[in-house]
Image (cartoon, rainbow, N blue to C red; front, side):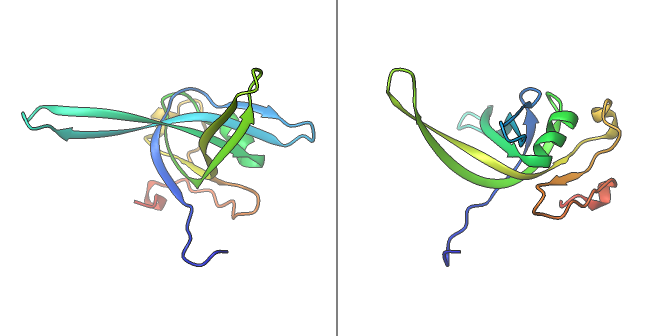
Length: 142
């Protein structure tokens, strides 16, 4: 690891849609989803302004499978990961770039009623990390 270098992203936001899960030819799961974070402030006139920022997220392996099975549009989710920029050439030969959050773990937040189709709310990590499952609100990191 490079000394003095950190690539860490922590987001709490609402899913813009159900995760799209697919499998690579080798059988590894990949889940893509968009996460919305909101910011509010008062402008010079005292009016409240709101801004929504959309984050493109990707998850791999067992965590991706769990995300595809458990996460639903509108759900409040805590994610941790890192920023990654990819590039490719489109069908016209133009080089394209995208920056996304590679999520290493997620925790479903909100009341249990909000997760009506899910039997538990918990924390889910990639295979190389601990797979502790948290089910009580006291276990949340904030």
